[in-house]
Length: 172
Image (cartoon, rainbow, N blue to C red):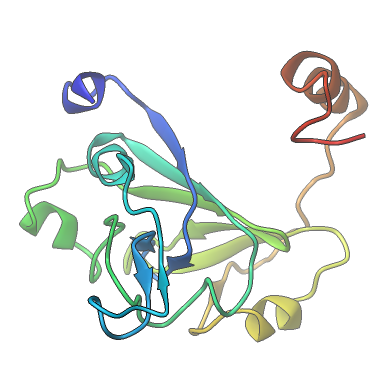
């Protein structure tokens, strides 16, 4: 955490149970009543510090309406909070915040003027409608909207042989 506080950590990778259009994350509880939730989750585990202080936050998550919600049940980790300038007003370092969301159908970034999520590319075989049907808020789309490039043979080799030789994460 000290390295984050000093501005020495460029990227952090996070996940979560819920994420909203500004990249705020919930990893604490599902349900309207904090004291009697439907599901109690593990909490921040340090993710709040990482997302608050690292330069760029990347989220890796499956894409479905239960995760991509219009309103979080609990705010565990800040994204752009309520939009432009909200992070800085809350005392978080300028220039930090959400960067990308990598999901099963798309690569998502943030529209600079509004700090809202915006699909930057669709993975091969995925349509806009697939994303819309699996998102609980109005998703923005880049124009033009490219297809995410497939990994090269060399990139796949590195991932399979050097990053995950046992096939635990990437599989075969």
